[in-house]
Length: 280
Image (tube, rainbow, N blue to C red; front, side, top):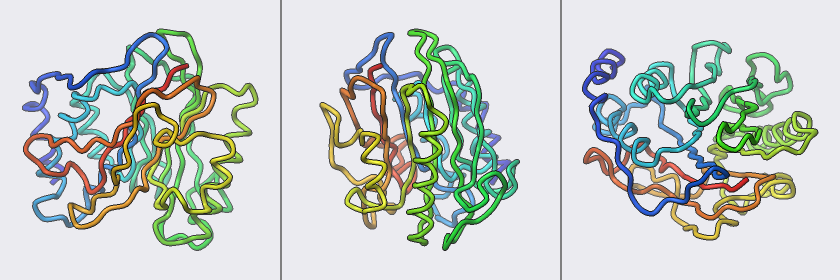
């Protein structure tokens, strides 16, 4: 499968750059996507990564985010995007060993628009500085963070990308509490902050209570928004569990659940990407 994905690199470099719909743009805007790409190791039949991978590139070229966070991406999935979206750079590590093994919570950013100042990863556990599994979690879970500078406006901002556990309620609660604590610690200047991720909880879950006190949910606060499910289960079910949160921005004019079909695939993942436009 890895070889198959890499073979497509040359072909995909000729994919057209497209723009759909009216966009909110300007020197003080930041367009953000959160996308659970569905791990390439998944046994998904005709929905497996080796078949649907071109659709991800079509989506990214269509939506042209300034910055985006991936969840569940393996090394070769990260490489596939990197090789086909040359205007972006990326950061992130494998959650199993802090290097390459396992899923990455990668952050990609358009290098012409955004510069990286510093970054790191911590584990959602009692020992966050080393690869570890926390509380009642079923998996290793991490958060990747970065301090960025928008080259157009000069604004500095933080970006955090994560994936909460899908089983352990204590792991969800304590993992997100750790993220909230780290957000406060890393940002004494109260710079604008973005948090993206698959939280594996719906918006009414008390796990989100403390986060809602310090950051805004783009889906809720946006001037133009929707209430579509973000987890689609390949069409077999749905729920809202993918989020873009923010603080320190003046407004969010648009939030969108990206349900458009790409490359003739009904689903580019078992999650729809979610996108928000933020104003500094």
